[in-house]
Figure 1 (cartoon, helix red, strand yellow):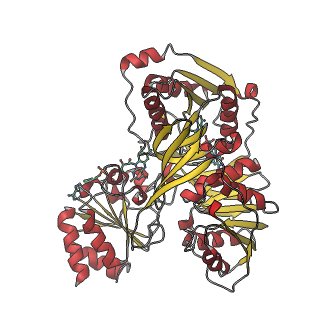
Figure 2 (tube, each protein chain N blue to C red):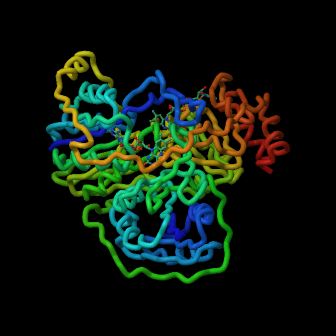
Figure 3 (cartoon, each protein chain N blue to C red):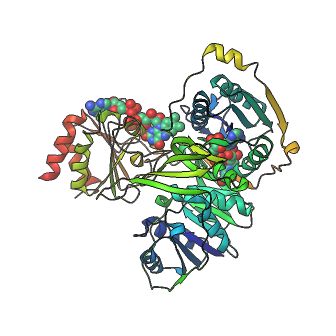
Length: 250
Length: 310
Ligand SMILES: Cc1cc2nc3c(=O)[nH]c(=O)nc-3n(C[C@H](O)[C@H](O)[C@H](O)COP(=O)(O)OP(=O)(O)OC[C@H]3O[C@@H](n4cnc5c(N)ncnc54)[C@H](O)[C@@H]3O)c2cc1C
Ligand SMILES: Cc1cc2nc3c(=O)[nH]c(=O)nc-3n(C[C@H](O)[C@H](O)[C@H](O)COP(=O)(O)OP(=O)(O)OC[C@H]3O[C@@H](n4cnc5c(N)ncnc54)[C@H](O)[C@@H]3O)c2cc1C
């Protein structure tokens, strides 16, 4: 079985972004970039399925500017067998990403697509669900456990009230939550080996997907600032402040 | 403008998110309809029918919708979607699960987790863990929107409208429900509570969360946690507050043994009053706290408990 893993290039999760002075967007100049943490979890899960002998090939896909190839190489260092870079100047909208991925699913016929539940830049949490709808594959989002049982899939999902377990027919789309696994670090020899793994480059035109934006960003502003309050010395002082000043407890 | 709201519920009770979505919808237009899909959930539809401003309530009550699985829930919404200019659902794990499918199958973008409405086509949403706020305009004919309920006030109760039953049943042929493991608690829900007290890695283990629970019971509060506390297995996943967990905005948020990583702040920094209890005076959580107490939590929590008891 082949597994397709989309990996997005995003700002490193430790970096706190700033908004540009002209309010056109956030300022990513010289910001440290990395693979989206949920995509790392997706790559790890795919690699584990390959190590168990369930998966035979892992294809990592990234869509966006040339620099996205770094994240594809990273995925290959972690165990992906080959990469596909769909090159475009900017990052397309989620629905367009889903359409591009749907084309690749047609070409590659994977048994499973493992995708991050959410990109930590746009925080959309929608691409996997859109891909599942477009390709008519069943979906299991926010997965914290995945088990392949013959030609079906058992997935435990993290939902607001607790956990839910579903059984899906395959091929299917699974989106990863934080507790699915703990991704490994790439080893130096694997990083070297990854440089020689095949990486195909395609254009959105070749795939026949129109990436004209449908959402216009009118402005991007900083959130309302929250300033530090006061330090209290004792629990008694804290309780008095909460009762008398903030009036949030009685 | 005609607005369809997908009701948030657990087959028994309508959740307050739905009331908050009605408030959001009134900023878009006045023809507001609610869809309730589930099993044995007629009572939920009756509750939805009494929200002020709601014109019509539709009920799809069938075993096929018992668990509100994404595939056929989306298809059900699509089945009745014609004529609506806006389709709204709460940005909960239910809404996030099926709504992007509705958007994709209508061939429109989804506007995710919005916190404000500027006009019929322009919405405000946080990005980058809430470190930037984007105002975005969609050119699509239908706006498919998930709403961060905590950003809107709950609509009031009003006169009741009648509930219509939908006859079409759409089965899910690809996915079957196996089981669930729901956390049982008599405390208020995290996203609806007026007071939330959360513990982090500093709590050291799950048993120590009992200290937070006792205080929560005294205050009528919900108990939350940081990702570190959930990952370490102290408490279940549904207690995680943050960028990738639940977003809360209570009157009072008490962070205990939580450092204040940006991902955690993303889930609670819109709380009205924030209290931080941490033994490290340099912990970033103090930068957003209205009241900070530098103390060992194992000393402070028992003191708070007895202060509340007296
Ligand atoms: C200020 C601003 C506001 C925006 N608002 C909206 C909006 O409201 N609606 C909208 O549709 N778009 C919006 N966009 C555009 C959109 O956020 C990005 O273009 C985004 O890259 C699209 O996917 P996502 O990250 O949202 O996907 P998510 O659904 O959050 O990501 C889930 C997973 O999809 C995969 N994935 C996503 N993108 C890629 C990629 N390029 N390559 C490989 N894998 C990928 C990854 O596995 C990721 O973990 C906005 C952009 C900006 C700058
Ligand atoms: C993709 C991604 C998504 C994430 N999403 C989330 C999310 O949704 N929510 C979230 O919370 N995190 C999230 N995180 C994790 C986040 O980055 C932090 O790692 C996490 O919030 C840290 O939890 P913590 O504050 O409990 O632990 P730590 O950072 O370890 O802090 C523990 C604190 O406890 C204090 N302490 C210890 N002992 C005591 C004591 N006896 N008395 C008083 N204080 C004490 C310490 O001084 C310290 O400040 C995410 C990370 C990533 C990469």
